Amino acid sequence: MKPVFPPSAAREAGRPRARGNSVWLWFAVPGMTIFCAFWLLPMARLLGVGASGPEGAMAYLAVLTNRHYFASLVSTLALSAAVTAATLAISVFVGLFLQRNRFPGQPVLLAMLTFPLAFPGVVVGFMVIMLAGRQGLVGAFTNWLFGDALAFAYSLSGLFLGYLYFSIPRVILTVVAAAEKLDPSLEEAARSLGAKPWQVLLHVILPAMMPALISSGAICFATSVGSFGTAFTLAANIDVLPMTIYNEFTGYANFATAASLSIVLGVITWLVLALARSLTGNGVAAAA
Image (cartoon, rainbow, N blue to C red):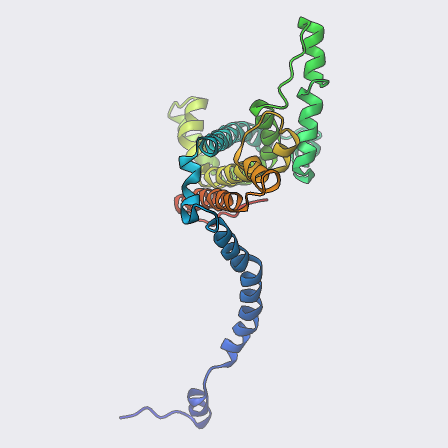
C-alpha cells in the first residue's frame, strides 16, 4: 500500500531541490576562480619552468645531487630544527609562567613579547646587526671586556638569533592559550601521589599540551625554512636555501634551477605541516 501525502507535501517531494545547490554554487565559482588564478596556475607554471632547463625533470633532484644545493638544504633544515626546538623550550616555560602568575604589568609584558609579530624579516635582521654586528652592543661590550669585539650577526648564529626572535611570539600565544585549558585537578592528583615539579611537567603538562606544541612547532619550522627577509639582511656568510634560490634567480638568471629548488622547498614545508596535521588531528596553517 502506497503512503498518502497531502497535496502540498507531494508538490514539495516532486520539486527538485536546486535552491540549496545554487547557493553553494555562488560561493564555489568565485572560490575556484581565485584558487585557479592565484595558486593552481602559478604552481603549474613554476613546475613547468623547473623542468624547462637542460636537465629537464631531473632538475628536481639537483638538491640531492649537487653538493652546493645539498649543503644549503642541510643548513636550512638544521637551522630550522634548532630554532623550533629552542623556541618551544623557551615558550613553554615563559608561557606557563605568564598564564599561572598574576603580577602588575603582566598584560604589558605579554604585549611586548608579541610585539615582534609586527616586524618584517628585514627589520628583525637589522635588529640582529644592531645587537651582534661589528658595531653592535655585544661587540662593544666584549671589546671593552676582552679587548676583542665579538660579532656573529652575519653567520648562522646571527640568523638563528633572528629566527628565534621572530618565532617566539607565535608560539607563546599558542602555549598560553593551551595552558588555560589544562585541568588543574590532574596536576593536583600527580602532586598528591608524590610527583616532583619536573615530573608533573613531563608526565602531565607536556602530554596535555602536545597537540598545541606540535602544531605551533610545525608552523615555526615551516616559517624558518622559507624565511627570506632576515636571511637577506644578514647574507654575508649565510648559505640557506631561500638565499640560494634568490642568487640563482637574480645573480645567474638560472630560472629553471630556482624554480625547481622552490618546488622542493615547498614540498618539504608541506610534508612537515601534513605530518603535524596527522599527529594532532587538526588543521595546521602556515604563517607567513
